[in-house]
Length: 474
Image 1: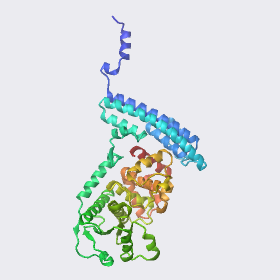
Image 2: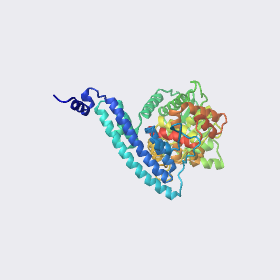
Image 3: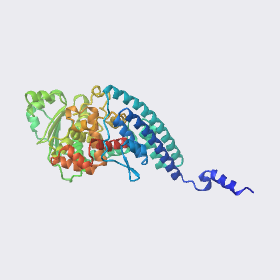
């Protein structure tokens, strides 16, 4: 007979399942927690490197990520200037935490490149480990657990198609799109298809009388559209405009009967048509005419009127311009914000075109790749990836430059960060965002309004909240 002690040792050495105690979910939780703690240590190592190189913006990002993965990570708390008080580490409101990179531009750039190499190496390691955990969970038929691990793998390697697919992302026009974005686009397409197209109009319009043109015309409850297109195409544009109004009312939680003032839209073909419209209908002269003749379109408020020509984008510009301009008109009508910050006005418009037309062809912001370090910001479905990459590389535009930037100073990275701020606010902080808009409409200064509405003391805290959303969702 085998000694009792030997039997106990043998039982202890056997796997849990052989003793009838194996629980795959609990096992996953333990493995997942351990992997998170391991990844957190990688972030702390990167944070210390960045701090040593005075890359303070990147260091903060790394320490914050470490703390999110492991709430007990003491090194991360030290890096964030927490204090030890009452037997525990707690945030120190009085601490001055540096958030801007220091040094000569060439030295900072060199340090950022070195950091990026280290970051990519660490990320590849974490991505591999989370992928292995996801595969293990899938074999154990832990569907949601596998998805959670794949989401982490994708966080560290957004180029991994396996991790993207495992996280629930889908392919759209050759680009990966999040489940939330895919659902939103499907809903907006359904909204456009079901919106009213108005009725054909036979009577001659004022635009026709002044220009001598014969245009296809349609009028709905909220829009009067005419243009050099077929009646079916004009009906599509009216439906797009009506759907944009409905989407705006939903996004900003307005009454169904809000924003009833009619909007006139004129859709033309060529630059010559555009100039003729400016001269004969808009009656522009001199410098004002010279400024607008090379633009793709023209707009004015009270009464709200816009005009657009095809240019190099062809028909695709027509629905894009419609959504963009209608969103701007509705935003101005609802909130009446004097001196509206450029990032907010354009960010709102792009938020709607991102969902409704998957395009950003109405370029009030310069997306020229030569002016933005060779990066191509014209494809809107790449905005999330590029925004996340810049953030991770420590090259995201400073928050202050975005918030204070005028329209002509917003390049691709800054303009898209403005759009991303709107995306974050509407997706995760809608109540605070609506409060912010209300304060702006009431005359509160933007800086004061954003601090009060979002409960932040400075740009760094706003940046931290936005950055967490981007890293988790883009």
